[in-house]
Image 1 (cartoon, rainbow, N blue to C red):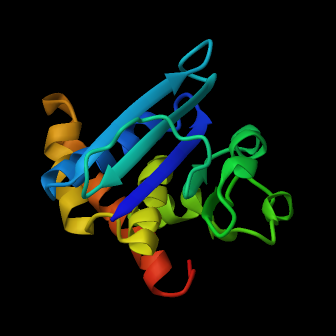
Image 2 (image 1 turned 135 degrees about the horizontal axis):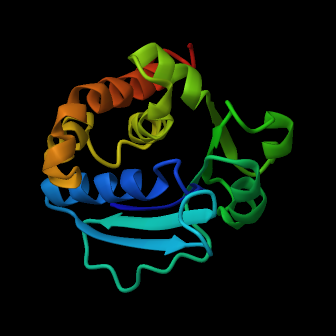
Length: 184
């Protein structure tokens, strides 16, 4: 098994957190994993992206030039990272902020994820990043949803453990969206 993804957005969207959480969940399942964050000039409001590679074999490099998947949370991330996805790969698009006409590409499977609306449905529209991760995991099955939820205690600082229930609900809402055929 081999899976790689670039997750990108602007600082403050929780891009690094969902990459980190995905890495923890893969470790929880006994997989080899790399996680590499990249920050722009400024953290909040600037560009942010991370790469995650998950494999059942040792990973030679965390650097991905042509990912199997990408998740883009804003238009500049789509412009930069969308064209890098391998033909036949999957592009997860935050359709709450990105016009899907901009994401049309015949060579890719484009999955619109209305992250803000799904977050609101889960109880907090600020959970857009978590709904995106729930959708990614439901679509790719790279890790289980249970592993993600169990990994929240490792990924979140103890002072934020009170946020585990809303994060769990948002992950589940993103996964439900995929399971039910992209229905909000």
